[in-house]
Image 1 (cartoon, one colour):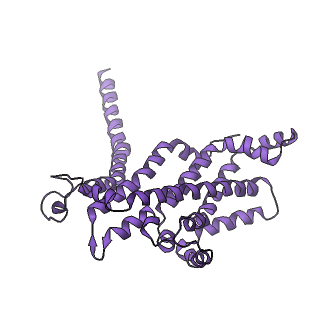
Image 2 (cartoon, rainbow, N blue to C red):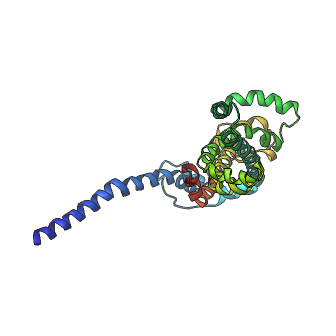
Image 3 (cartoon, helix red, strand yellow):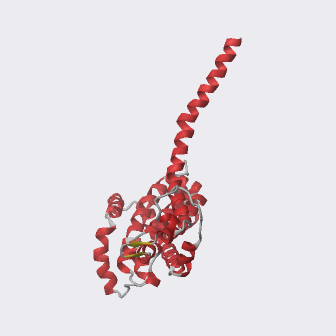
Length: 289
């Protein structure tokens, strides 16, 4: 009896150690690697210039924290305007892209027209075209339409890479919704628009949120189009404004740069953490037959 008890106790320890090695240790390493950039941005943004340029002391800690870098960023640059431009462009471009993607994805998956599969494949391949190639012909279009150095230049060009991705993502989610629901609605006399708005979209809310998060993140962090189509400081977006305005020749203002990077990262991190359940269910497909 005593031997069995001892064996059970040792087995519990082995199981616990195994859980620590196989689960908790990798999770801890993953969290440290994931959160370290935020920690580095935070401590760099509150370090005085003497500590930033010094080779002595602990680089992972702050001895005399200061808010001077945040003051310079908020009051001596156009950062509030950059932030507003980024929010406006991201929200409008994401909304327009989601609307177009819902119509495209539903048409490809449900209307069963000739060449629907080829159309879906073509949309996915369009997403694979790098923006570094697309911005060259788009620049000519933007100039001819008189949209250069305006927020509309970004609002109208961002959907060129947002719509293909959102359409591809929503196609997979719409595919998981049972087609029998639509057949019953068609028998009852519902139109395709009624089916889309009253049946499909309420069931596809996780997929819509997932696509919206992706589209918002891509718009928020986009750099090439914003750098090419915008020149004035008051019209720049956050990624471009922080990099171009806080680097003067070979002088890098690391404190304000890290403060701007920290402020630019927090909204996206907040959106992901707030909608994480919808995000995961949107990727896996939550509607089962």
